[in-house]
Amino acid sequence: VIGIIGNVLDIASLEKVAEEVVAKWGKIDILLNIAGGNMPGATLEPDQHFYDMDISCWEKVTNLNMNGTVYPSMIFGKVMAKQKKGCIINVSSMAAYSAITRVPGYSAAKTAVANFTQWLAAYLAPAHIRVNAIAPGFFLNDRSRKLLLTADGGCTERGSSILRQTPMKHFGEASELVGCMNWLIDEKASGFVTGITIPIDGG
Image (cartoon, rainbow, N blue to C red; front, side, top):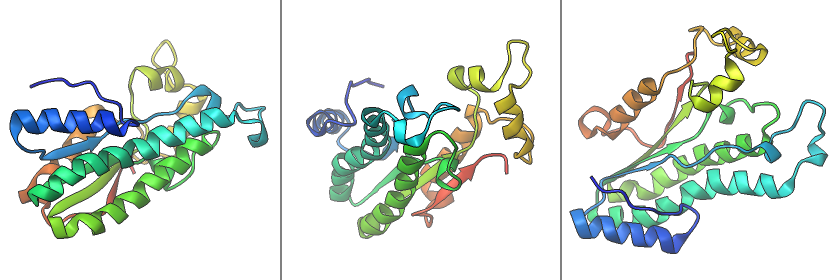
């Protein structure tokens, strides 16, 4: 195992990472495009109009989520194409299926990731590279706990609203994302699967 620092929005940085990985192992088997997220300035407050949104924050969010997937796919996908083998997994969101209120930039970018996944899958199929995506719903992590849970472990108003619309009536755990990704990576299990975005959202 090695760790290499790179910037998903810097082509030169990505090329350097790809060179280091190939120099050590001679190939690149899997690319997980997991950089992404949202930021306060691109999130509309309850009393804020869309017209008042900070455009610089919109650009940062759409750039990170969309181009932060496209650029690594270009650089590492090129290595995979020479090998005639590889697997790319992108991270979209359930916001691509139903836009989440107050986060227009994030929703738009994650929709773009789902569409790009289809396009890239068709483009790279002749090179025997599979490209798929996962679309997480609401999962518990250090950041989301503050939004979804109260200090005593109950649900906030937002958390309760989400669970009312979730048939399984609970939030996701990281292991439930990993299990799906492992299936997509495994050639024997999903070798004929490409170009899909899988909802992982409790229904």
